[in-house]
Image (cartoon, rainbow, N blue to C red; front, side):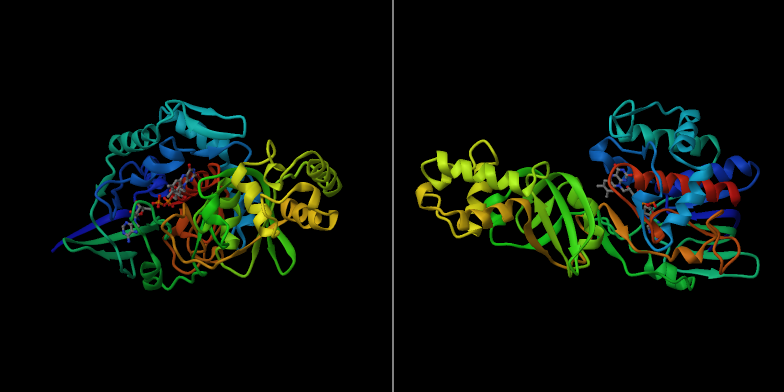
Length: 403
Ligand SMILES: Cc1cc2nc3c(=O)[nH]c(=O)nc-3n(C[C@H](O)[C@H](O)[C@H](O)COP(=O)(O)OP(=O)(O)OC[C@H]3O[C@@H](n4cnc5c(N)ncnc54)[C@H](O)[C@@H]3O)c2cc1C
């Protein structure tokens, strides 16, 4: 078996690892830097982000859009130097042109995720960063001088080690679970759960609503308290609620023990909804017609069903007492969330290496000198909209500058 000494080894050639290796190589042009990647190519996940367009950052992103114990302090420190403007300016030096949509989401001007990966790969090769693919690192040994990494072909001795192995969120069946690796380094981790995913809910009504979308305000309720509320488009799927606003609630909802409440008319007061509905019951013949022009037909039917009203019943037979529960459903339609450990449809992982394990100014481990942990491997996850890649790139830049 071959033995090699390198200055730094980066485990994981994703967004964070590629960026980190580039910055480290720029800072140490005469030192050998190696990326060890489990897949057959680096940066594969970047290509599927943002539906193939790669929403690589979010203008104005701040601590409010990140979650995880201690994430607020970490982001405040990190974004002092590596905020979205700094990340995008650096990408500009690599040749990437971008555009920003009206919400602040940043995409490559080409609208192709491959442009982001291409500039990173080009810079990697300009800097002679070695990439070893098809190498799944599961154990690392701390030595007096640094770290020993054993692959089937190689014993690698690295003075500095970066863990950029991502999270457990699955995409296209490529599951990356770095817990074993973290355990081998004695790093403490929080429980992992899927985030930015659809939320499984218990409801018989969902079958008839499959594929339908509605704008709503979605609130996540636990112990009668609103944990988080988001407005946007909700998509009904078989057994789950989906859509960006649901994605943003999912990190809490997927842990179970809570409900999602939908307000289908968030711009109306409850009294206005009651007036509107009473009026509609006065002016329509059958109950099935009442929601015409208001909601998708199947949503109207599901609302009637959940209140025990038959669509064929004449409107004149419905009393105000029966209309009130309908108004409550429209403004506060409740779905009980199911706990899930299914990472297949999740974009990110909530949980990971505890942030208390690292120095927030450098991402170096407080436990082992010369060890850095970046990106989604850490217990920090962002909302939907470019926040996760922003963090991956920013943490990669920061660690790369301190290696
Ligand atoms: C479908 C989808 C769409 C997304 N869209 C967006 C978006 O538009 N905007 C946004 O901000 N975020 C998006 N995300 C989230 C974003 O992609 C991740 O948060 C980000 O890629 C994390 O970067 P990372 O480098 O930390 O981890 P990753 O990108 O996951 O990279 C980790 C790398 O490490 C490798 N690896 C893992 N374990 C080992 C090991 N033991 N040995 C060697 N190599 C290993 C993996 O193969 C992988 O290449 C999306 C995610 C998905 C799944």
